[in-house]
Length: 383
Image 1: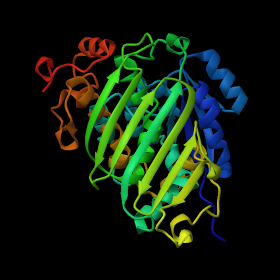
Image 2: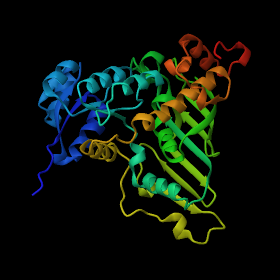
Image 3: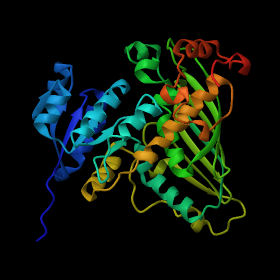
Image 4: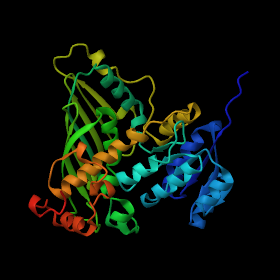
């Protein structure tokens, strides 16, 4: 009789709302495939309350002490963005795989620094892009791969959310040095990652950003036109000023339109397939619904990641695959703050926007965003 593998030993860094509401339930959903051995947080009250609620035995205020004592297989990073790089690097160096909340890091340079601490066969660092893993997206991905919907032509990617002014009272929100950027970085990244996971590499982006209403250092709204390597084009809007909240993606292909509208997670009922007028074989175009109705969720992605861990292979949403959305976001900030269309090929290691999304001039970037207009190219301090 084949012996079942030992449960994966997981530790969660950060005992706040995202850990309680998403990561710990996702780990519990794995059943006997995983056990949570430790929780880390500098806030001792939150640490013990969350550990008590989820029966976590190991409780630490120091990450290094936890790594030395518990030797976890997986470290889940559920801290504010400014801590992601440091936590992920420490976990990888201790031999643990990493699953890190979005955004992966504050910049492409930080992302690449984390990746440099990975090793062939693991440990690897993967990132929370759960919308890739619902059955609707998986079905569309298969249809795009086999060509049954025709050629991608036009797409729409909207993250229209609402965050009241009090949301930004949390000290790390809305600041370049602790959040990296605004809704383009911290909110719309989920829908943009799903977009890129379906349509592949992007070629160029032209973007606008502004700070219209919230008291933040970064933007509170952004718009962009993205051209993909395939030739398809997409409009992207990210907002925290939209009272009727919606997460909406639309893909117009030569043989069908496919849409999904949800807020923070979708099921099969949130998708719609519309064959083009010339298509008579509608079963070929739709093939809907899938046999399973898997919601996009932390649990769905974590199950995939643990499977990769058990097989010793790189997980999805890691490495170059996990980098793509942060790369597009970097291009968007570079375009909006310089007033120029940005080619993906331009984002090389010596570009100041690779090091920081404000391009090395946080005060200047804030002034431009609050002015609500793109600077003239001649006045830009960035090439």
